[in-house]
Image 1 (tube, rainbow, N blue to C red):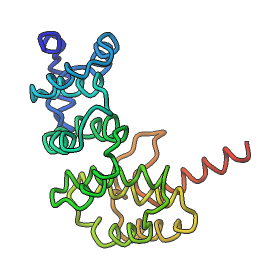
Image 2: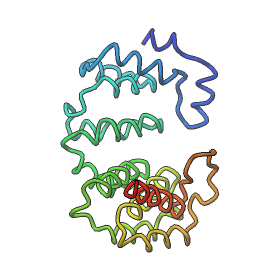
Image 3: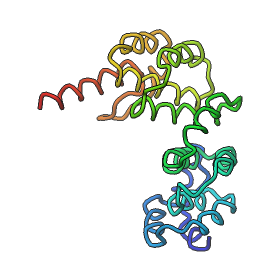
Image 4: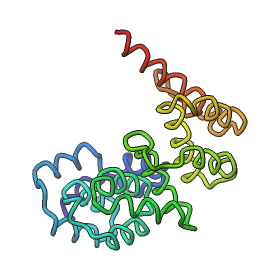
Length: 217
């Protein structure tokens, strides 16, 4: 904790706080500490318990993802209110845990939109990698009905799922694009030069173009 405190930088904190992350530690330096520490599950648990955002990010980097129980991960997600901690926990820990599918189903139906957004993130992973058993048309029904008025974090996660269905599943691509065009979610999102817009119709078209180019290369 003393080492993390010494790395605190006001400029870094100012940038992070604009995104809702209350820490001022450069992520490159944080990763360097994690590389030195390697995997240490007991330390990871203690770091998480500090309730400090930088410490929790470090905990995620040095933990053993498969060592957490289902209820532990559920509690951790509900405590992870900083967006970066939430995202890293879902992507770097929960997705690698044997309880991921059980949590996906539970979180998708949760009344807390931040928790539900994690369920959508895990669902997007399945859409891309293991779609068998998913009701993709049903997911599009939910997106079409709820995404427009969803809270920001949940809306972003639903939009990602919408785009991934359109990218990965040609038979549903037209419907996915149509939903995106009608709802116009993230249509005007500022996008840096060289980056793809998160607006689903644009995102889908660009990723499909890249896939087609890779096939013909």
